[in-house]
Image (cartoon, rainbow, N blue to C red):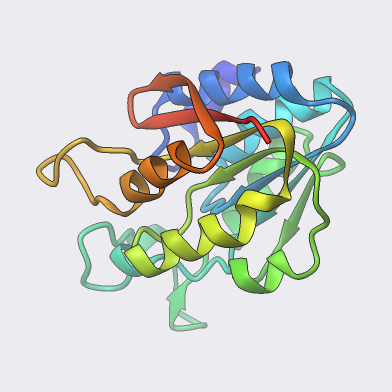
Length: 201
């Protein structure tokens, strides 16, 4: 099943998806996971499938209006996800289609809102939180501060798009990655631009 997820529109490398799947299988304890930034549902399906097999749940958070670099005229603009009637990017139909296609509708709960709003209603003690939302410094730092304390002790913080140099990519995710290492998180795995960290306290 998970091999088919690689065909979903998105920016997650297949090996990163496998690492997410395997980490969710390892860390979930009949609890729940959280994803910040679902786009069209590629990472959602990797995490959701593991949650399904472990009888846990996934909450995925996205306003589905695209991040800064995905807007009309920007570097990662994709005309396929632009809704002419709404006059904006709209990735929600793609997420819903993929959840239905892979039979994950009863496992994954999409929250169509921003990260700040979602943080006020999602409870604590998540097994895993995956940060892959907007990559501006302000947004990445906000996501980290809002969600780091919602992970249970021994749970996992996953962060995507970690690049060692500006030539490779934006540095906001890398900044919160380095910050987490000084605040009770320990690196347990890195696969390409994905890091997995265990919360020790």
